[in-house]
Length: 279
Ligand code: GLU
Image 1 (spheres, rainbow, N blue to C red):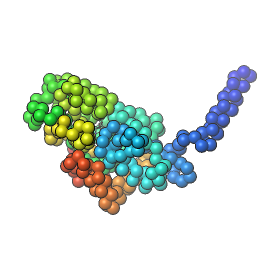
Image 2: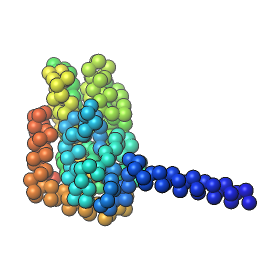
Image 3: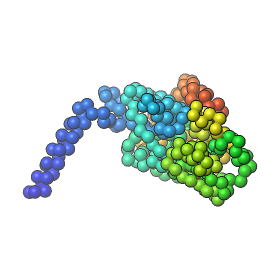
Image 4: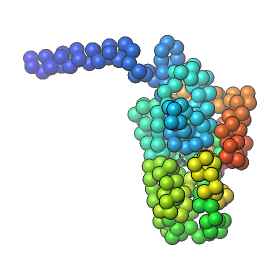
């Protein structure tokens, strides 16, 4: 029958494609077990200096990158077996649901809404929402932000907090990444960029922005960073929580935090306890 022939033909094509992939393509296997030439795909940010940054050379840096590398190590993957994938704020839940990545370390705040869709290990870091403004700006503590032009990122808790509580009448511009917001602040298109102080401090300390921006120093929220895994993947979740505990107890957490936030003078909070969310 015609239908059957077609099916057999596509099966043959598929088999060839699979064979081609197996022989030497860079495609990876993120099934989660270690060994062999297997790889693990991990979601990070690409444009957040100090947290997750893809350098022009193609290498990666930042605290989230270090946490991801440490955790992957405990799951049995060497650094060379990690494939970093960019997961922007609005893409994180879908990337996990689709299985694009095994886990996500990307300034990813734990909250109830997200917990309906993904599971979180951690928290491994506590940040606070703040504002980045131009040096000399009159926006500071106590300034009414309603009516101000604020920039934040689609799918972030920062954008949500502005609309719900911080300044529902602000002119909120939502873009896909914080670097786009920073460009808007530099050009004067917006009055402030709002997100986690950890992210903003990283931008402010970059050589190309030195002296241009300042943090307002408002602790507008508690952002408990978790490591996202696919909903129901409790085996990975448990292993990651153990890895995070060890990362703190063996001193690596502290070393990595100092290495990454030292340059920006960011006053980081002590390591949170696994399973304890600061409300
Ligand atoms: N931590 C906040 C969040 O998860 C803001 C930073 C981000 O967009 O990654 O939404």
